[in-house]
Image 1 (cartoon, one colour):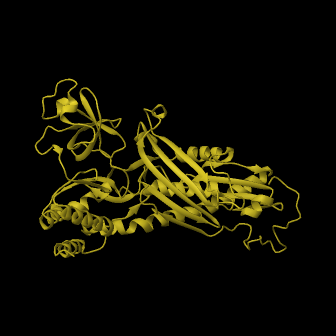
Image 2 (cartoon, one colour; image 1 turned 45 degrees about the vertical axis):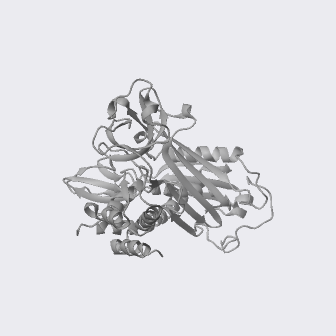
Image 3 (cartoon, chains in turn red, brown; image 1 turned 30 degrees about the horizontal axis):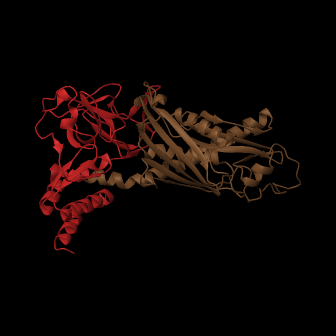
Length: 223
Length: 248
């Protein structure tokens, strides 16, 4: 990739070069300015700013891990690490739930994998579990990372996550909201958490995959 | 303050001030972005002998719930001075002065943050003065705007400021503690650097209209220098992240 990537800050004027303004750009007096700190990219006729920091912003279609924090007669309120709680309605679950029986299926403190069904213009979010793979998570361990690091943890075509799973013999699920679920033996969980912390901290230093591999194999021998 | 009669000479015959600066010189400034692990965004500033930390949390749910606005986010800034930040121990907790400063800082920041993008949420800004040496409201505001950018919050521009004042009948830039205490006036100014719009403008003491105009111009020019330091601090933190993205 030989495209020049430059860091832009709020208020920086940017040259659209004939492209349309995309995410993170506002227009004032016919000129384009940056809204938040990020990297400028040009893709299919749009100039976008990719954020380098910040809270998780729910996007339609994202698969996220959330924690049930409240039960109502026909829906649950789920904390998905976003600025808002996201409701999950009984009609959007794989179960047949009678009115008022929501507590039988998911209780406060349960963790689920869900998909974001819709986000409207006032940022109200609706979740769904009606899809294969979306389920309640039993057992395991939860850690949270910045949502901007999620692509690094997954790696190119899932290479990093695949390596973590294979070398530690654990089950891992990474939510787009930066919540990660890990299941396996205690040693495996500790190893994966250690590896993820390395990824978080050293993602920008070349040779990340090798270093993570080193870390994992060193710990495999039991030292 | 306010023309207190004293025989202390704050400016000598050569026009030098007690810390050796000339009338239009800033104190040394150091800004660092992203110093706190747990906050969504943070910044640390050393402005002369001022030492201030700013932390940003949010956008997040509003508590108490009745304060939430269905059309936009609310921005709540809290200016607080540590008990050990001044010579004589400051009684902890909000007082009249810090409540007022919290309000003017909230209003200044609200004018640049794109609050309509996060309806029903709150963005909390905490400004903790660890060591005070005059001009803390502007230094705090400058740090807070770096912390907001570090937190990835959408805003029209950064905010930057500087104070001017009047000492020994001369209009000077960026007062220090002695000049603030024994000088004649203090004039804190904060602007949006792109448009040069004023977002904070206060005066304590007496100045003539011409003196205010002169002080205002000096403060705006100095603010633009501080703005460069703000940008540099943010870029320094994120340059590594940009390289990382290039690898992918």
